[in-house]
Image (cartoon, rainbow, N blue to C red; front, side, top):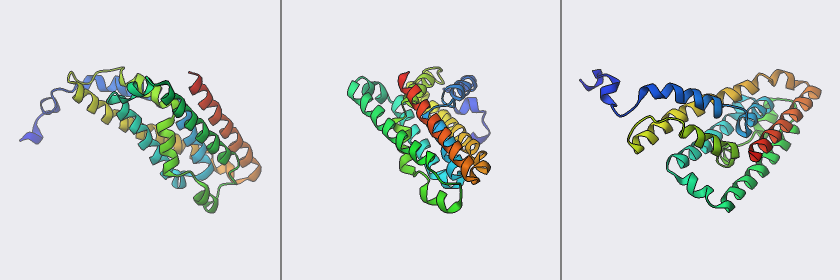
Length: 211
């Protein structure tokens, strides 16, 4: 009998009408160009979707950790300590520079080189956790709507909705990068495109840090 009950009766605390606006806001803010999304385009184009899948999962997991930190109030406590913010920025900048170098110097796309050189799950998770734009963007999206009156229910609902959006948007950016792969099989084009993506990645990170 319970399976036949309307959703509103099964989950009376959820404000279902507030979910579409939250999805739209999260798409505009969290799905916009930034260190994580630009890195996925660059990695997808340089190494292909299949060999970049572990990196994608890592970015999703790392960003979800930030989402949970925002939901539980850990973010506010951490960012109240200036040293923590500086450490996160330093780690993020160092990894982005390392990743940009490997993208810029990636050889023409092939199964052999892609499998060996593609970034790992750990690298993606590290970027997801330390991404400066991610902390600010998720905090902004998280406070933009209320899905329930009860704080715990509201946080749980937002985590579920925003995690789903993370999976969709980040996967889309990776697949978008894959569309560049055909031009990367010619060595000269590959060097130019990879270098441009590496510069774009560093530029997006610098812009996020300045804001």
